[in-house]
Image (cartoon, rainbow, N blue to C red; front, side, top):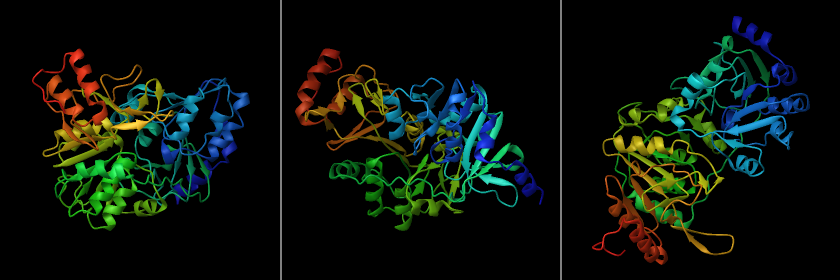
Length: 446
């Protein structure tokens, strides 16, 4: 067939494929499990001969050899849309910058604003019609390829084929070079084991979820704890509409809770844009007609979410202040992760009829000196970035309860937020609220 002839003509070794890269180029490595391995290694050997390479990526789950080949950052400038733990360490070493974004805008950033000279993405094998599947990372993969001057695909037989949705693949006619990577199992990221505190916080949320709700779970132990409690609850006929497909949804499916029967759109399908988890999760994704991979400008569009009744959005954060501002991406000037799609879902869930947005977090943490520190602050610490503005934040949850902030005045927000803070910090927070002019004399003392 013609598509296989074209494939053979475009087949190259990793070294041949990266030969197209030249000094000054903008390169794109994709996102998460679409980031290349063999191409990255081949390009790393060319670093001494190149200058001013600018690379975009996100949620890197393996070391990036091209970046590490230039520890002085003289030739390679790497930037990430969302930090993994590895990218956080790169950032701390001065080898990575963050790219601010609201996740739903990412495809438009490429189509309207960004330059890509060479895109290098890992994909599932080509089918008999000439289509490569973006597998576990739809996100903005299609937009990246459409923008790129030159597209190189690293074909991995170990990646599952994810059904769409839309924009879940690219045709051989749109590709400039193909590199075969053999069968390389995708990196697994096992869910964090929920703590007793996580379960305590999750219990406050589960009691707010009705039968037939559609659920979005964010990254981390707390959202997974909610998923586990829901799986063991009496809830039924739940739906899935999320950016990140995680193992908690597989647990819900196995327990018979996840049917997607009552969704007004994408009925009978769980919708998602990228996936990271265990091998069992990846096997569940493979050619599953009950799951639909979409680009992030669909999954994270509040206008789409508004069509889903009882959309329950569950995410976590690092800290919140008495104005109701939420920071989920940094600790002061130290960048931790990214905005991701949290604001997308905070907005969209509130637009949903019966929908609710929960931001959950433990009320305190223990610092390196062993001192207990409140995560609820009078105002954001210097350098902290507001992920969710006070105008959008809906419900905050700690182990001490829930604070519904929507439509509340500054004194009402302060009162409710102090009410879910750790008791040993409440008197101090009340005094701060008084000094800030957001406390009434008639307020009840939590």
